[in-house]
Image (cartoon, rainbow over all chains, first blue to last red):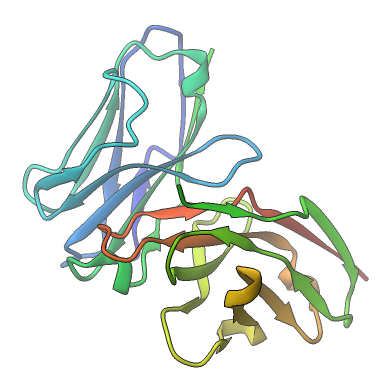
Amino acid sequence: GAGVSQSPRYKVAKRGQDVALRCDPISGHVSLFWYQQALGQGPEFLTYFQNEAQLDKSGLPSDRFFAERPEGSVSTLKIQRTQQEDSAVYLCASSQGPLAAYNEQFFGPGTRLTVL
Amino acid sequence: AQSVTQPDIHITVSEGASLELRCNYSYGATPYLFWYVQSPGQGLQLLLKYFSGDTLVQGIKGFEAEFKRSQSSFNLRKPSVHWSDAAEYFCAVGARGSQGNLIFGKGTKLSVKP
């Protein structure tokens, strides 16, 4: 009965490094979301997948951010050439149905990224 | 544009006292409304949600919230706070017809005095 898991839980990167953050959603969940939570702020939407299709990437802050979910289960959020402003907690959430507005989103514990 | 405002950044209440956390939203139609709780090192956990129907919604852990359309509010309440309720609370709105991504407020941190 595992929930949403994310790895690594903590990541320290030097400015300019590339990082990859992994999300394992609840098995069978169709919808997957990535959110970014800066210190002292609420989560902000980054991108949404329905199965393997990325249907909304309007929240990605720049073209350095890229997300994929090639087989409709595990997802990876990649950040290229990290900058200090990328420091945040990255949250992944999944929900059962395709119309995620009607379904509860289950959140993972997040990956705390610190860029030095 | 949709937005959520949580006016109180930090609230301290005594254990056993009642609690009300405020949330105001901006949205053109009736939104989907949610309250989540986040404990340190934990993921966000859904406390309750409002989609339609009865405007008083019951959630887990003894929480309830009331949707008031005239005030664009969805305040969270609990009659008697326990020390374990200390956490950060987020109100969120989901747009009808959207893919389901949520717009969150900035959160209210709740501290509980013994």
